[in-house]
Image (cartoon, rainbow, N blue to C red; front, side, top):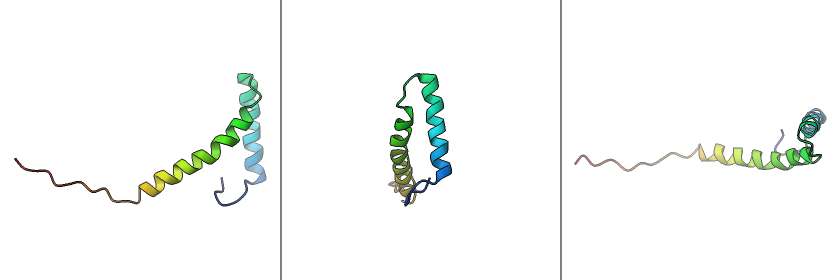
Length: 65
């Protein structure tokens, strides 16, 4: 999924079909909507984790007592 632009046609069709199939199983016709609502949050969370991974962790030295 592109993070700086629109979703391509194949990606849109895939997610629409996935939502349709989930809707058939769950009986909730809103499943496609839920997928499209969750995707931006998932991408944002991934970006946050990726950025955090670039920071060095600082641990104070352990005392040898």
